Figure 1 (cartoon, rainbow, N blue to C red):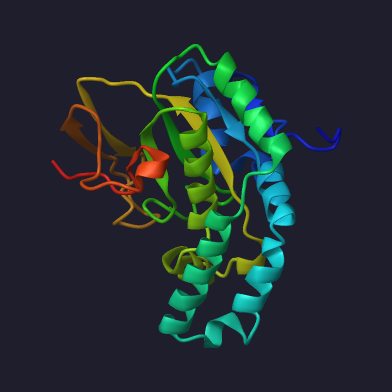
Figure 2 (figure 1 turned 135 degrees about the vertical axis):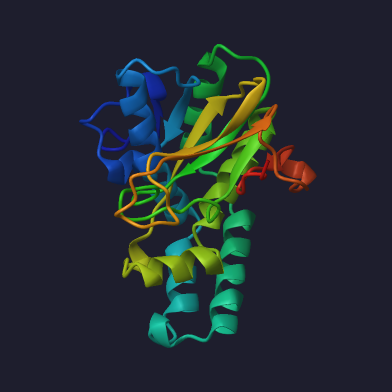
Length: 242
């Protein structure tokens, strides 16, 4: 591995010295929770360095520039954004994970104290901050089993950075679409009695809200439907309602 790059970092060793540009907001927030004594499922973060290596291997930056550089992004019609996003994601899914990145992921999986399923989750810089919530815009997969399935799910999470919905949301927030990057969390699956989602501030009420929101369902959260058998997972990009 290049000395200047970190492709995989164990969740237990993440700390405030790790830039959110490297590990993403979700991983950084989970590291803060773990440091405060909360129980966080074990796992590791595949950094934005790994994503950048993937882009370089597949010359995907050229594909992105070609698809989104025909004219100013804000002047693209929705159907043009949809077509461009589809072609970008297809290019991502056709590109193999670089050997050094795949080897680092395989090593981290082998060192995890779990033998079965994991969750593969997005952790983009700027995701789930006080200013914005990307809930449901990027892919996350649960019950992923085996090294090849994990690699397929990681690639799908990277590709989801370039969905039409994610691109348009970034434009709405005045974020630089071209500089988007993605880290990925891989964590052990924890099957519990209930599960759900909590917001410290009601996202429907804006910044002035003083009300927390907690949604829960019996058993593990799962979205109806599934993804390709190749990834051996089901998607959890949306939370089921009670």
